Each structure stands twice: as C-alpha cells, then as structure tokens.
Length: 190
Image (cartoon, rainbow, N blue to C red; front, side):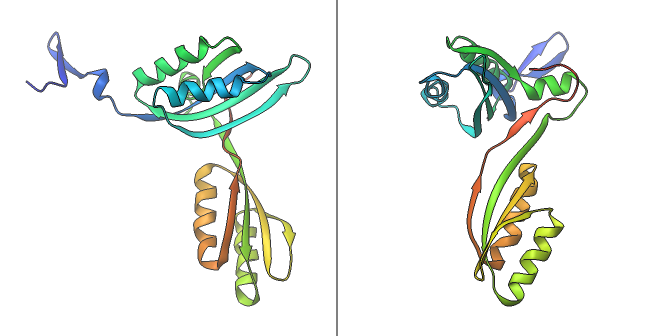
C-alpha cells in the first residue's frame, strides 16, 4: 500500500501531508501601532512560510485599525496553522481567509486588484506602439518625456504580468507594484 494513502472504510483519501499547496488571500485586521507588521511578518519568516504579496494600510482612522492583505501558499493544514497563529498575536483583531469565504459564497476567488507603475523608454515607432498597447490595457500615462513614459495600470495580477511582458521588447526600464488588495463580494464586511 502507498504510504500516502490511508484507508477509510472501503475508500482511500490523500493524507493532509501530501495535499496540494494552493494560494490563499488572507485579510488581517490589526491595531495600527508600531511593531504590529513586524510581528505578523516575523510569524511567517520564523516558520518558513512564504509571502507572495503583502499590502497594508490604515483603514479605520478613528479606531486606529489597519488591514493587512497577505497572499501565501500552502496546504490546507499549513493555512489553518497560519490563521491560528495569526489570531494569537495580541494586536490582531480578526483573520479572514478570503479565498475560503469566496468559495462559501459560491465564488471562485475574492475580488483582487493590484496597481503598477511601469516605466518604458520610447522614441519613434516604439513610442506609438507603447501608447497603443497602453490604451488596449487601459493603462494611463501619468508621466511622459520625449524619451520615456510612466504608465499606471490596475487589474488582476495576471493582467499586470501580461502587460509587463508585452512592454519588455518595447524598452521596459522599471516596474513598481503595490501588491494585491482584496475583498469578497456580498453585503458582509470582513
């Protein structure tokens, strides 16, 4: 018998240790005070968990609360451990796995958006092609000189990846990305 398959009556299932890793988006409501972000990040690095995307900003000024959006990858067991450990950090008020919540609501993923600034060199024909492609991707020109453009693009990470790949042969100079901001559909808040 395969060591990773365990019998349950007459059926077999894959043990949690061999479950496939998947990407999840976590929303963490925290007290906006010095050291909170370092403690959250320390939890991930101290246990060898990777952060694929991280955004943080104060969301409730009067209550001094910030929202941290973390995209991480792991097995269901690892993701449960991450959530449980986050909830034990004192300045953490709430942890919501937006990916799980979306599935409970019958959605594939939460609404996720990212902003990027993309600097592209451009003169002559490449300048016209850069502007044409920027328009096709609904990117806005936020700065321009006779030698370059800085474009702002908002959308899913995959859209930004595709835009950056298309800009490379046209003279891509630099990219700055915000990381993912995410929220579930529906009337309920976090």
